[in-house]
Image 1: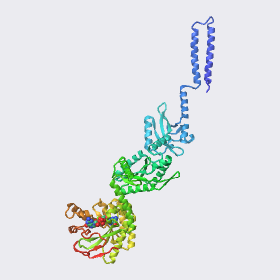
Image 2 (image 1 turned 120 degrees about the vertical axis):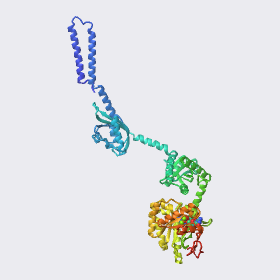
Image 3 (image 1 turned 135 degrees about the horizontal axis):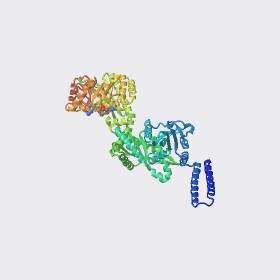
Image 4 (image 1 turned 90 degrees about the vertical axis):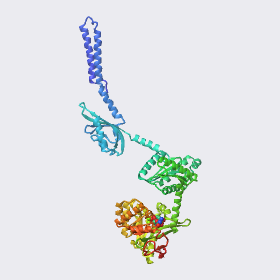
Amino acid sequence: MPVFNRSGLRAAVSYVAASLAWSWAVTHLYPSGVPPYCPALWVLASAGLLYHCRNRQLSAAGVSPDLTRLRLATAVYDNTLEGVLVTDRQGRIVHVNPAFIDITGYSIEQVLGQNPNTFKSGHHPAEFYRQMFDTLAQKDKWSGEIWNRRKSGEVYPQWQTIQVIRDDQGELSHYVAVFSDISAIRRSEQELTRLAHHDPLTGLPNRLLFSALAEQALSSARTARQGCALLMIDLDWFQQVNDGFGHATGDLLLKTVVRRLQNLCAPGLTLARLGGDEFALLAEDCFTLNQATSLAQRIMGVLKPAFQVQGHTLLIGASVGISLFPHDADNAEQLLRNADSALFKAKGKGRGGYALYTEELTAHAQQRVEITAQLRDALEQNQLRVYYQPVHDLASGRLVGAEALVRWQHPLRGLVPPAEFIPIAEQSGLIAEIDAWVMTQACWQMVAWQQAGQSLDFIAVNVSSRLFGQSTLFAQVAAVLSATGLEPALLELEVTESAVMNEPDAALEQMHRLRELGIRLAIDDFGTGYSSLLRLKRLPVHKLKIDQGFVAGLPGDDDDVAITLAIIALARSMGLQVHAEGIEEEAQARFLHRHGCELGQGYWYGRPAPLLNVAINSVLPGTVQPKAKIPVI
Ligand code: C2E
Ligand code: MG
Ligand code: MG
């Protein structure tokens, strides 16, 4: 920019002209000599002229204070790293700076005249924008984090300040938005959070994050009344690997261990590295001891085979400590501590094993594991037996049916009652095989009785609630009926109250399909669970079996009397048959008969036995001796 432009030149010329005029005037007006005040006037006039010229020169050079500011602003606008966008009062973009182009990826031509909502990410609800414009209307300014979309489609966070610009009349003329791309900051924040909560070697959650996750899982489990298990895992020979082969090998080994453990992980399982060679696994929705111990066995199983690391074959194995929520602890910290002491116990017993926090649980769990394994053998080696218990008509005393009850003829323990192995079979899933086997045996037996001329009205078989929730039950029953040739109407399936009430929709569908087959359905142990009368009314069942717990108190116990009478009245009002179990005395049978109960079963009539004692046409319950014995097939 030149220092003199045309007006500057004009000022200089005027200065020279004024000086010449002054010299001429002084020479001609005062030929006899200059009065003494003239030099002072000259100095004053010169100073005035110089001042005037200087101003002209400066303005000629274009450096008025306003212009200076404008120029500075332009320089900042062009060179700042912040994106700048200016819109007119209608919101049309009128200016953007080079940083805007860099950040958004749009060219100037693509955005001029557009509305900034072109860059919306869809990340914010309409309410967010409404509040933003409210603030602008009230304060002329808004700042905050906003997520926008680049031309590439990438959504990124900006820190944005929007300023309203008003004209001299105070009317809104423009909006200026200045923003910085804070995606890098967000990324480093995330990275910092990740580093603070994860183990850098394996990428697994560290103790801090694991404790928080466990606390969260426990609080959901508390609400849903579910159980959780915390398994603390320690590698058995890791220290020796580290000492013998160095830390680099140790680190690689840890990474391989994690890969094997991660293969076990499924939704609801959280794995963490707590430090060194110690890991923790949180199993949500793990209520039973059996689930927790089988998980521990799977962990030990996957870590048992040799690891190949840097040309070395390494055998390490693991020990596991288990603590259960809510059995052992009611918060995450305590659960971790208990799992730790269980781990200590496991290590103390020799490596490669697991221990539970409480002693008796450890023994119990091991027993269960043994029983599960033995039960598998029992099925293969034909150690299960079916016993039959007679069911009588209370009015006539006639034998009308039988209930099939399973027993386990254990080679060492003798005859094991179902209470000791059915719950374990239910947890391990073996119950499906057991129930199918019992059902087949019972149906064959019924066919044999019929062929022998001993006609009963029904043979009852217990079906685990586990199977009742599965859609395969129907197919299984149909297969047994077709294999044995038993008339469906002669088969009665007993299912517990909880099985039909807990999953009402699945159970209802299952029951309807079973009924379509033509079989009979009974609700076992009625009165011990929770029944909704409304649901009960919708169930296509034939019979309610009064639980033996109520029969035991008859006829003396007022509560048992009241409950029994209520069940009989309920069954009759719904047109259902009513059947009492656990009749041990004649007085109980008479009481039940008098109050309208139709069928009875119990030691008074006969204990479950491999050979059924058949007493036909008894007049009074318990008064007739057995007439015939039919062998089990
Ligand atoms: P449940 O179906 O309620 O069977 C009746 C139980 O009461 C039988 O016990 C029977 O022996 C016993 N009992 C019968 N009369 C009397 C009596 O007068 N007094 C007393 N104190 N008890 C009597 P058990 O055979 O030990 O069976 C127990 C439970 O095991 C059965 O209860 C049933 O829920 C289950 N169960 C038995 N066999 C099977 C099976 O094959 N599959 C399934 N899923 N569960 C079975
Ligand atoms: Mg039963
Ligand atoms: Mg029962």
